Image (cartoon, rainbow, N blue to C red; front, side, top):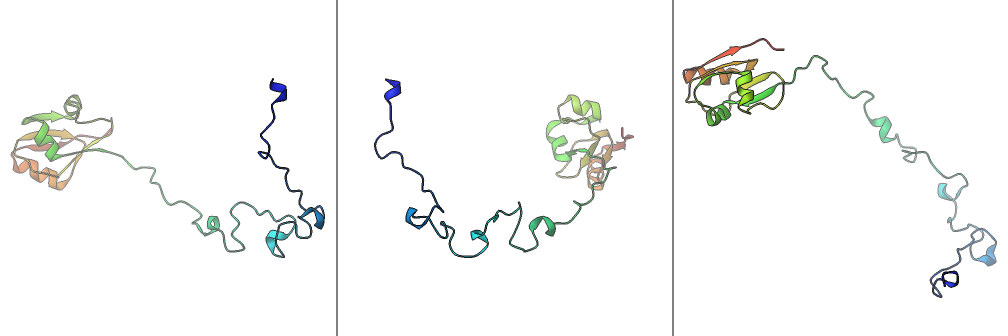
Length: 148
């Protein structure tokens, strides 16, 4: 029956009652060793305490740096991607989005990685010098549209 269940013999042990006299086996120093900070009453220390050394939290800079509130994040496309995925022609930001080359609504910037052989006529928000050179060299053009 459930009310007769007991742990196996030797499976449980009585806890050692420290600081209850020397004959109890945990008297005098009560298992704390002799002297030192750990042996004293109230030995607990606050979070981050490093033994009197200047703690990590105080060694860090007070403020976390500078975040430019006027930063404009752009979505970039390299010219090698245009070369691989598009035919020569005229493209705007919406046309690039329709062809799944853009994934966000951020302003678009063309970068100059790769080579161009097709004549692209692009209207985007920004383009690097190398991208403009590569596209114009291939017979295309880059028109900069006003950003949102």
